[in-house]
Length: 90
Image (tube, rainbow, N blue to C red; front, side, top):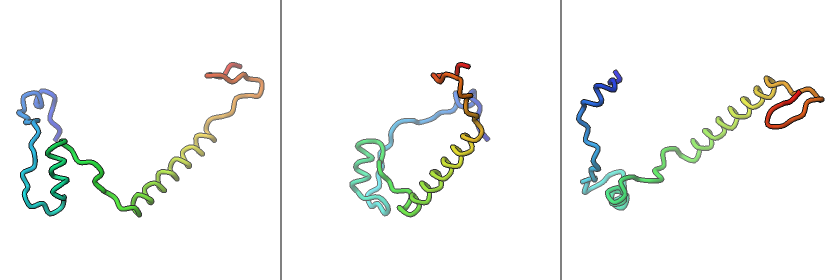
């Protein structure tokens, strides 16, 4: 259930920064926790492996190619006697 704007405006939300108090991290290095506490965010957390990234890129490259190919077929070329500019003048 998504709260309404009225409900959100009356809901107490603590938006202050809360640094990590973990003393013995198991996933992140101590340096990463120190960087988070200093900067408020972590950068370059690897979510996907190189193989997964290659597959994802291949999927979206193929999707883009198919979309452009369909668009090229769907948009007719202007007649030869038309002037081309930012818009077509016939």
